Length: 288
Image 1 (cartoon, rainbow, N blue to C red):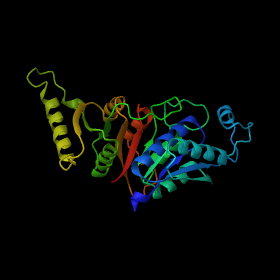
Image 2 (image 1 turned 30 degrees about the horizontal axis):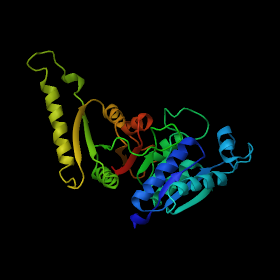
Image 3 (image 1 turned 180 degrees about the vertical axis):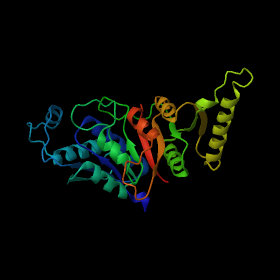
Image 4 (image 1 turned 60 degrees about the horizontal axis):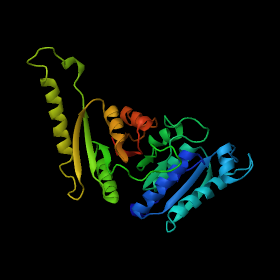
């Protein structure tokens, strides 16, 4: 049963991946499922000042097993009753994590991995996995002090999508006991602008009304036990959602999966949100 599937988190010893461990452990506790910690790489040893300092080993003597043990200890310290398993896989991280997603209720990663690069943009591993994961994938963003932050805003934001995505948002809201803000962005096509004083507002009102109707239709079967906040906003969906992420604890959106398509299966909206969100992002796979 899906309820028994673990939350899986990918780790590489970087600060972003340690924040991902914190988030994944919390998610596993909320779901009452085990946590599985996976290190996948093609290196047998790690080097880097941060890793050497944290693990107390000379450069060149840090093993993947050391990183995994450190992550297991970190999760266990915060949640002593949580069941935690781990594995080291000598394989490309992208392939290993996508495979892990087949038997997970959620997959968690950080932003960038090792190497000291800025976290302003998403790393290639997380971006690739987000485009192919078989379960909801959580990319932990928005904190830069080696700690995953608990909810500060008391709100989840979800972009209107398929029922799968909305249902996921409702469940997360129940677990956290917070409301869900459901957003539908709308844009007025450039060719509909007009300078005529009697017609200037009509195109905008029409498209806004269509957005309201689409939002109402998507939420007609929304559960009564979840507090909903509905909002339409003019602008590109990517910009609207990124702006909303500054006041949310979690941003959720769907990504269409096309069977037998092997390219990156992320739309432009999801791609932009993953790069620029101010809070953790969940990508929920939807069937095209």
